[in-house]
Length: 121
Ligand SMILES: [Zn+2]
Image (cartoon, rainbow, N blue to C red; front, side, top):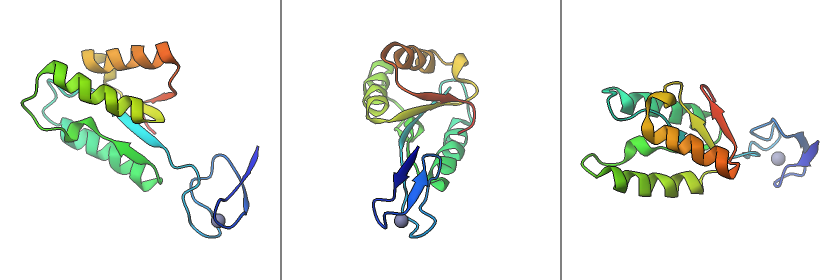
């Protein structure tokens, strides 16, 4: 299905991220990153790599690994639920099934019908 660039009105197909004529982002999405944090000592690098891939393709990553340490599980889930709800889509990192929080987020996505990807973006 064809759409039009909001900037220069060039026609494009939905898979394109940037307009090839004027360079504006066409399909920019807010993407929440879900995955294992607790018990993974390298979680910040893992989430950062995923966030960079999203940024590189014109999207806006919502990265829960940037939250400060020391909050309670309930606090994290309150904040993460707000980020999850703000997102257009969710990216589940390959280890999401090892995380109780990410498993809850998966259940949430399935229950309300929020679009998600598993593995790589
Ligand atoms: Zn354009």
